[in-house]
Amino acid sequence: MKIPFLNNILKKKYTAVAYTRRPEGTPIGIGVQIQLKKDEVDITDTFIFEAKDIAAKHLKGQEIELIIDDDNILSKSVTSNDDDQDSVAQTYPNLNTEDFYVQVLRTADNAFVAVCRKSYVNELIAHFAEFGVAVTAVHLGALQLAVLGKHLNETTVASYNKIALFDNEELVTLQPQELKAEKIYRLQGMYLDATYALPFATLLNGLTQQIEFSGNLIEKNQALAKETKEKNFFKKALQFGLGALLLALTINFLMFNAKYKKSQALQEELQVITSQTKSSKQQQEAVAKKEAIVTSILNTGYSKSSWYTDQVIKRLPTTIQLNSFNYQPLLRTIRPDKSITVQNNTIEISGSTIDKESFTSWLHQIEQLAFVDQLITKEYSENSTNKASFAIEIRIKDDPEE
Image (cartoon, rainbow, N blue to C red):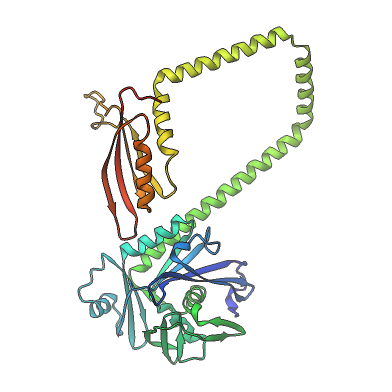
């Protein structure tokens, strides 16, 4: 598929993922990857994955545009006007836009309004980030299908779970469909399965900017784009810095290689003429210094805390992520006029887990440790994403047996 004004863009791949659900309710991602080659767009990959498999090879380490099109999206159309607030008020009269992201598509006759809770959008972005996937933009519902009206000679365009109706290349209605569409579209010599129509349309509109959207989601996308730009700049600057350092080291090695070899020869000669007595004395001094360092560390009292920490952490399952680990925590805020007081023989730990069974097993293992006197669960609460936060307190025996 040719896009004439992209001639000067370097080859680059772009990925979009539509986050939706199968008819039976299983969350899935439907992805498309395209590559720009001169003035053409080629589809290089299409894929479908279940939400639990985000870390699959298709996404890890990539940047994606995310389209949320599940049952957390509310979408309606009203008679078009020029004011987003009026359009939102007509579609959802009691909606608090402080709590919702809004995306609006305007045609000659209608305004299509899609909304989603900000908390849900942010949770999804964070969920992808946990697996090394950076979300660079978010879109709501199937509004992006509107761009296909300008590229397909069709009055009806289907995606995985939506049907878009067009009149004179303009979107007229968006309707849900229960069964997966079995349809192949042809775009200037390229074939597109209807299953992947929504993520492809999103990428296509991102390149052509033929369809404009409004709403407070724009601010979120601007923030995501800025964050991605800053991270990429830092990554490239780091790579450049490392490259420059490597080059400098290489030049230094080439310039001083001869001197280094001569110095090495002198060192070898010195080792030959050094007496055994002197060598033995040096080794004894080195051992004495090391013993002094070890004795100093043991006397500081840190060896015990390090040992306690090691015993707890090495039993930590991969399903648990720690937020804090405090040995002998402060009992009160440090003040210049007050002495520092700590809670002796105590370890406080907080974090989160995605597996209650492995969390319980971990607690049982801690209780079996010789130095543990008592283990107290101070907090355990689950949220809607099957992720639980916790806080525990470990009380240590006065004279534990290591």
